[in-house]
Length: 202
Image (cartoon, rainbow, N blue to C red):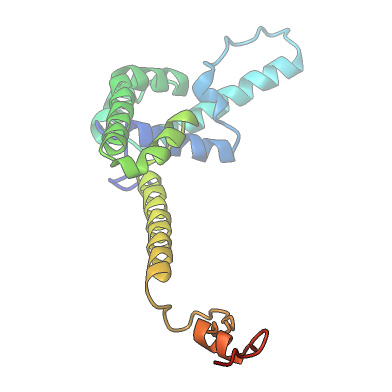
């Protein structure tokens, strides 16, 4: 038995229909929502046709009970004498604007988020639009968080690289030392060289 939060009302037709389809798929009875009950076969019809009709009729009755059991009392009174297919058609006509409205709100929220990005996120926005991604808002926000973390890490690495060039290396960073010989001064070099041609006497 459905609780008040899952029963069909004026605001949750999209979710209600999705849950109904999931339940019916388990028993392979979702077809009754898509196809109306065919006319009753004549008495001399083949057994296979009679069996198919009886199965469809029985499944339709069961699905109708499930649908009515997950509605508010007001909606039950409006649809209690209808078959499952007729019932879902009537409900879709009654709430047909609801699904379009929900879709519009979702697209509007997504566009507002994407358009509010800084230039730093331009690559993410282009990738999202080019691949025609259609993510729920929680998943989109999670993707943004991951992108922000990656951008932050990249920026930090660049800053450290620049600092490492100009300043002293930080503790824990090993730098291979090179031994550089001390250049000899010109005076030392000339003192150690032997004079050429001797010393002129006065």
